[in-house]
Length: 79
Image (cartoon, rainbow, N blue to C red; front, top):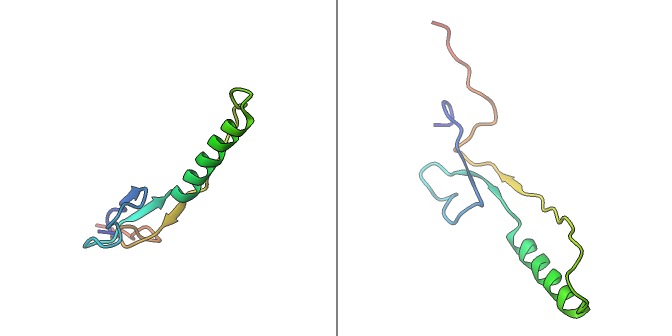
């Protein structure tokens, strides 16, 4: 398959690496996302003065390369 088609998934689900052709995936930092959500909630409750000011929190995903994709595109034979 990786010679003809690259396939990838999202969130690195359980078993993605254990399939017949291990699935390349994008892994989200779920533990860090959860900790950040708890910290923001704690900040909101501790402050008590009302809603927090909106802000962006950016998390970097990780590309987990497995056999369902190839590092380089295949070479095609001319007919």
